[in-house]
Image (cartoon, rainbow, N blue to C red; front, side, top):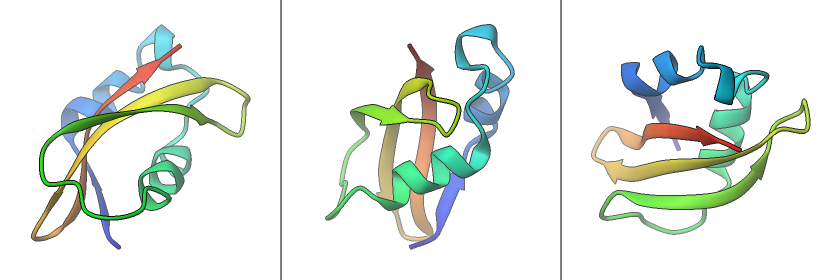
Length: 73
């Protein structure tokens, strides 16, 4: 499944709260969610390779899985 990361989500990766979370971490997290996501839904408890815990908000669109935002812990 193709994972699309919004500009908003990419911008959030530069914030201090999301530091040490890489794009590859987001792609792996979004790809690992099973099933279809018809509406924007928050998924909790993913681990970046750096050990940082984060949540993502994602939904499925015709072009793939859209990651709307990232919330670092």
